[in-house]
Image 1: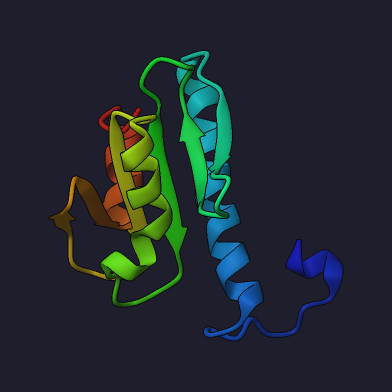
Image 2 (image 1 turned 60 degrees about the vertical axis):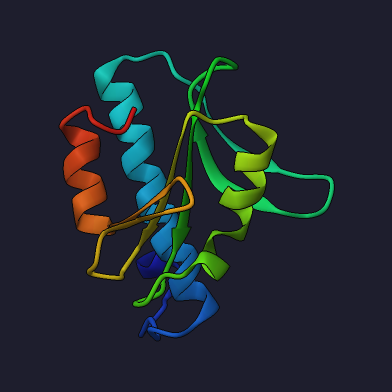
Amino acid sequence: MHELAGTAALERNSDLYGRSFEHFIGMELRAYVSYARTGDALTFWRSAHGHEVDYLVGGRVAPVGIDVKATRKASLRDARGLLALSEERVAKRLFLVSEDPTAARRDGIEFLPWTTFLQRLWAGDIV
């Protein structure tokens, strides 16, 4: 996409970088769902109050919620959408994927470095 658009540089702290990182994880999710032939839908979630979660994987029965943040230090503030989704009891598992190298679990949300997330995804441990 960036080559076709003529993007010379992708600044680390830019909005374009964040969208590109989110898109990269989304394409990995799409590839996994297709390759594994799970039949799971890949959608997103938005509340009436404007909270969003980037990806829901699965059908109506207990999907997995995944939010992607291009941050090097993930916090609960980054997980506002997932916390709102948790209150709705829509998803059975919640993940915040980021560039933070430290994995953690807070308030029912798994905070994962993107490399760990992709390893677990392709090992069949996420979906």
